[in-house]
Length: 128
Image 1 (cartoon, rainbow, N blue to C red):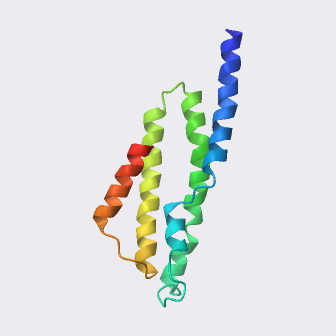
Image 2: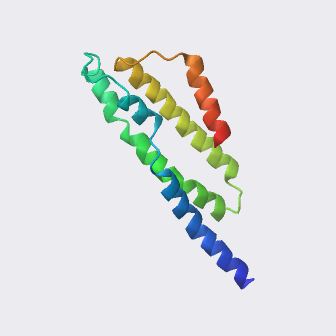
Image 3: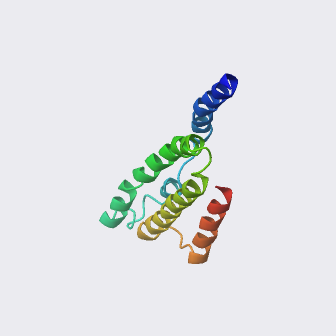
């Protein structure tokens, strides 16, 4: 029994640690969109665009928090929170995808069809 507790303790420490190392370098969809925008475009310099760009830090912070919180919550609950964490994570990913679309449209980026956004959200849900 003591050995089982040691294994759980190691898993509790290692999984969030290694997942944070593996995934912290990933950028959010909003950050990718901002990186691809034409900074010389008049739409890029508009107040509406700049406000949208300033809001992308939220998605970055959420992504970093999810990397640690999701595995920890699932392990601590003994697997009971796996469905709620997947649903919550998918909702936050969908919010990032929608904000990326809004940034793209407000800042003069390429137009993206809503079906493409829906496909990306569905793909993220499956990959979660």
